[in-house]
Amino acid sequence: MAVLDQLTSQQAIDLENKYGAHNYHPLPVVLNRGEGVYVWDVEGKKYYDFLSAYSAVNQGHCHPKIVNAMVQQAQTLTLTSRAFHNDVLGKYEKFACEFFGFDKLLPMNTGAEAVETALKLCRKWAYEVKGIDENNAEIIVCENNFHGRTTTIISFSNDPIARKNFGPYTKGFIKIEYDNLTALEEALKNNPNVAGFLVEPIQGEAGVYVPSDDYLVKAKALCEAHNVLFIADEVQTGIARTGRLLATCGNCSCENKNCDNTPDVKPDVLILGKAISGGVYPVSAVLANDAVMQVIKPGNHGSTFGGNPVAAAVAMAALEVVQDENLAENAFTLGELFRKELNKYIETSGIVKLVRGKGLLNAIVINDDEGSNKAWDICLALKENGLLAKPTHGNIIRFAPPLVMTEEQLLDCVSIIIKTLKSFED
Ligand SMILES: *Cc1c(COP(=O)(O)O)cnc(C)c1O
Image (cartoon, rainbow, N blue to C red):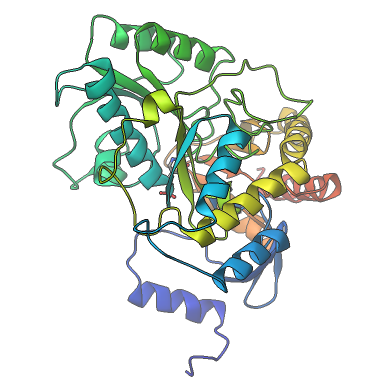
């Protein structure tokens, strides 16, 4: 087979199976083109993308403004490392700090790196500002969290598949139940070594668990009372996904009039990734105010590619698209419609237990055992019917389309989903 020959789906899958490590279990579909809310497979079949690369492609596939920013910058200057300055990074840092309402930004590439950065920042702040004795800092995390795949991050995961046989694990983490303020208060009480509380505003990977309306605001108040940093991992929930610019939305420049009535919370440390680049380039960031970020000094932390001019240009364009195209507002409106339409169906059927979510980060829970294959089989059938989604944790299917979707497209998707679910009714 010549390198330039168009592969069939099966050939492409066979190649990955033979030469690629088996660290994923993809749906059997091979894509070679994307535009807006659509992707096409190598045989030319068109699909609605209802995953958006785990909420990285919020702005839609191959958004021309973002791609253009990348091409322009790639033809001019791609990488200097941070040994030298480049003329895009500062502009991007100013833009993003004003956009999200923070003093400073630390640029990295992937979500996991940004989480690692936030943990290091929190520990250093604990020793140098809060005054915890060296090596004693503890960070509170939540059960069923997902924060990435590094050795330290999986050390405080409780997913056996992500953890087993990767030890020894990093110490210094306390795990509590999600959406449980009493558990947080207990963990903070009488423990002067707690430095931070790391939390997802909605647990995406775990199955789109939305906490009580007052959870984040009260958790932040508890952290403040104990001089503990409130660290929000908005890698998946951020950048308009949940119907507001950030799920915490604290003091950002969001002008979404429809914003739901969850109280705003301003994290001490904000972690962003995924859609901060619209899915065209790996970009992540940690934002904080000076009182925290000042503990980082030259040589303490870094990354060869972090803050490179292509990443900076791409991220600025991607954030502008979110604002120019009112993606937060669109996600809010379409999310309400999506849950309303699915709830109508759920009332009449036994196949789906419930739909939950915020904005366009939603999930349905299939009425079956955790261990059954039904969610996977439904995703295969959805694919046949022209819509791509993936199960997360057994019997849960996550629905997260690009936020550039129109109402007409969304209703089309709802009818595909309901038609498919109906075919599984007994
Ligand atoms: C995806 C994700 C990460 C990890 O991001 P990577 O870019 O895959 O390293 C971290 N936190 C949350 C909440 C995520 O959804």
